[in-house]
Image (cartoon, rainbow, N blue to C red):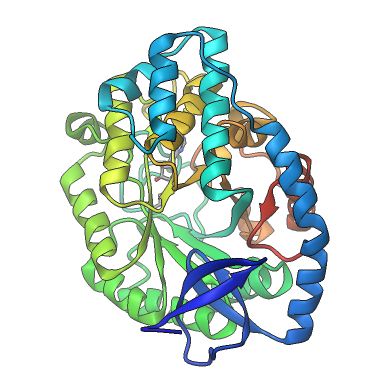
Length: 416
Ligand code: SAH
């Protein structure tokens, strides 16, 4: 252990993680998540976990290897771009734009398989699973695409109390075994910076997990206080890198303010998860390519891109949603552009196709989230339509584990 960074033995590999808790000593058994030690565990618990994974790990890795061998592209330019990415030379903006426009079926398949193989080479088969708690659907903003926008008077609003939020986090971490939590809400001024910090602090006291906040432009004071209270990640999308399109979609708001907020959180030390919406009206391929580059420039540890899904109670109700392949191409191009990133499969992608999650994983993605919002609120967090009646969370987890098993991925964050 040196300067707050510990060396960890992870199935024989040497890894490094930040020590974010005073109780950790050299020789302890720990859970590490997102480069941080989140929890000390007993030797007995560690032995049980290690015993399970020692058997399961090689089998999963073998399966992953089998499923993630790349097929060569038909087009020469694409093959060259892929080869260069594998050598650590990322594609240019023009090349990203071209990848987003690939149509030939063999090239599309080559793009996805290359992204998947690159993911395996860089990051092996570990897959990150976060629990998301959507704690309020009140919002002061009127984003043109969003179902919880202020002007949607048809929506029944809810807010969870501090103790309800802490209880939901306690359940996700201590009962379900999640090691990373996202606390998300509309931009709801009901929660002061002090209250947000109190929520984070109480959760950190009870839960060995990395806490991400996803509360939008809550202000510098709030981010400072949440950081001090122990939040370590911020999920905040810039939505689109095109300032004019951003201004059209967000009445009274500017892209610059959003980016300032993201940069401020990054400067404080927050891990940044960011990205945008795919398929917005008037959005070009060049603009999407710029979105990927902006995500890189912001130093994101996680890419969060998902399809725009039109919501009937918004001004964009009559627009089209994008095709599944438009989203998969963006995930794959992101992987080639940033081989070491976590790339998220969003729940919105799962709305485009029943096997959207699997397809996302086969196109270079390696993380996803499961909502553990209490059942009585879940349906009211109505960002986009078609959110299915969720299964019991336990059933959701079982299905996710089954999928990961089928494709040879090892979940790093929920219990075994
Ligand atoms: N208030 C927080 C959280 C916003 S909601 C913030 O400002 O960051 C989380 C995300 O849902 C948004 O960033 C947006 O990209 C996404 N979203 C909203 N409406 C959507 C829609 N119709 N289709 C798909 N995603 C949507």
